[in-house]
Length: 408
Ligand SMILES: [Ca+2]
Ligand SMILES: [Ca+2]
Image (cartoon, rainbow, N blue to C red; front, side):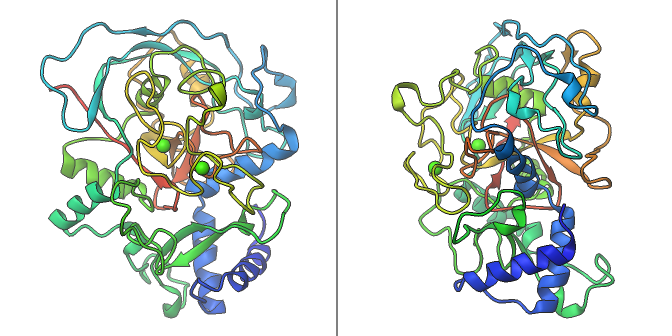
């Protein structure tokens, strides 16, 4: 983490370079940016790992045996081979809820052995997707797509719900902040003008007053015409509130990964091991020089309408890329190591409490699937076994959700 002073200087440059963005006062930027950056999470948390990646590996490679000696803080490594996925054969009797597909559940190997997961050269970064371990989950219904703007709007219309990004921070929450600095907003990705060293994510993330799900990149942005795009700028509690209204819930991390693997065993991506089979884009990710210019070579230089790419084996769209997706598990980098000590973990629901050594005291939940900002330069979190994490009250313009429902 860079210090506050460095961040402020960098963000000042960013604001100066973006005429379209409102220009908050220096005091405003100072207090609000400090607060949100301290919370980090979401995209920021993902990018922490991404930025490190570039210096380590430009390509994704699976390794037969992790080099434990490289990392004192990495979990102990158990068996790393993926055993076959064994789906349950039982099918639900009733019809599928609207927009949902049946995920049979069953036993599978969970985790990732990808070398670029091994980012232990910097403090606080561990191989959190190791060891590969055996897990069983019951069958469940899952949304075929990420939650869309039009679906979220129905919820808001029906309930009057106000998302966290829309709420004005209070003096009680931030007693030391001047009143004029308490402004609602959220985290927004900002392309840089020129190529930059990928060691400071503050260069491409800013706190944007007025950014929320209706205005994902700030007051001048809109979701008009994007009814079937994934809703973003959704913090964890926002997702939970929607789920409660819709009679659904967020998936556990294990459910999410079982579903995303689509019945395959140990593959890098939800569709296999080839990122672009027959040179076909399979997910909405980032092409070009990050974070300067996304060429949109996959057809989209920002979010895409949901289901713009082919689904996985279970009929799920965009489990890789487009928008990050919340899960209900607390984040701990050592959780897999704990589970790996036993036999088959049955319906794991995450650790009892969160702990991210890179940001002690923060409360983070697991996020999955990566986003349109993930690139093989460093953010390869569209790989199906890898993990993301985000502070629960922090949203961003590449974070959304998808939900599940238990069989009645
Ligand atoms: Ca793209
Ligand atoms: Ca997604």
